Image 1 (tube, helix red, strand yellow):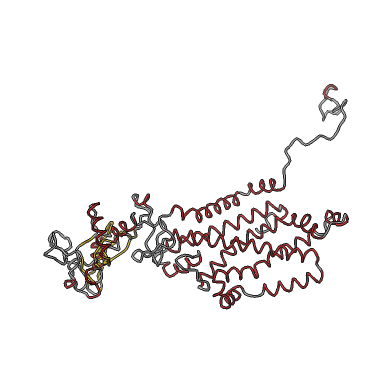
Image 2 (cartoon, rainbow, N blue to C red):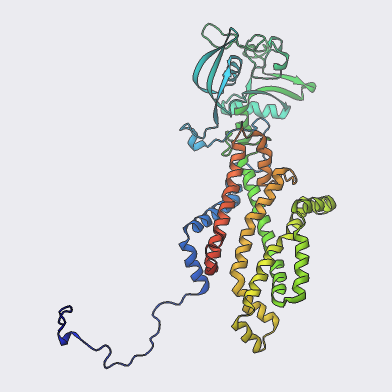
Length: 487
């Protein structure tokens, strides 16, 4: 007995399956198809799943915003240009309230005080320069109130309707007209906010209690002795002075509040961005679908038949691929821009050369699979070329092809945005815009009004990152052999 091993009794040893016949048993697990297995692999990629969720949210934003938005993309208000974002639900908390903090001198402070735009005075200090003391204020201003008072022209019917509104609601719309003879500077006579007494430099005169001293025009025939309007064109048109915030509320039925702010034309950025997103997404999907069809057919013929046909077709693709896209679009726009429009020229430019990458992918996949045993067996049994291509080779290459087309979507969006941003493509109108056009229009205001460029830039950044992550996850799920190939 070897002392290095324990002594096991004989009854511990039992023959396995001594009286049973060993046969193959059926699998007890559920069968898993190709697409179900691909979905399982896709779900394991958390970044791709998150990207897919973001893409869905961006698409819902583009589709649902016109339904719930207070403004449409054609809305414009010249008084509210580059107005900062405001959310009614959060404005009471002091955030997202359409305000900004500025440092102003005494003249500007008096002006905004007269307009009723100062929310809070954060600091007051003096700066001495060349022996002169200048007072500065750090103030928090409301963008929506900073418009203040404005002169507007109304027809007789509009004026009477507004008077009726005042009587019914008790809300004041019209304010006394300013005596322009008492306005010191000629340039300020068209500004309705200079309703207070001031000197040549624009500094306001104060009464005993520190308030502004009004310089209203008087009218002995009015109830309160003040003149509220001037008549023009034989009484058919009225010039009135209104507080624009209240006038906007009267005209639109709600107080002004733009969730993403406004742009240089006074357009609502939220509505314009949703419209631009719909255009960019629709364009990219249409381009991807057309290029998918053309590239698949072209690449399948190349890869399946090969030889001289492949050589000729490849050279044709090389020639087209060497033409710069910007040059191609410019030529198409110059030649057929009037006939097919800017959008038609853009779509044609994308289609003329966009299918080449898809064709190259399909060609490489056909070269890979056409020599496989199951294809040779099908050919031996008499399968035609069309059946071999459609039923035996293409389905195996479909995963890679679909992934390439998905990744084409952000490429189209980025190219269109780049052309718009550079000014080569102009899609700015009351009925059409794009994300790139919005970025181009807002670039000059980046330092002073960053919100105008922030939201379009955020949208296109999320779209580009999400589609690339989603495409990589889709590639790994549909073709596990290429997992991590793009990393």
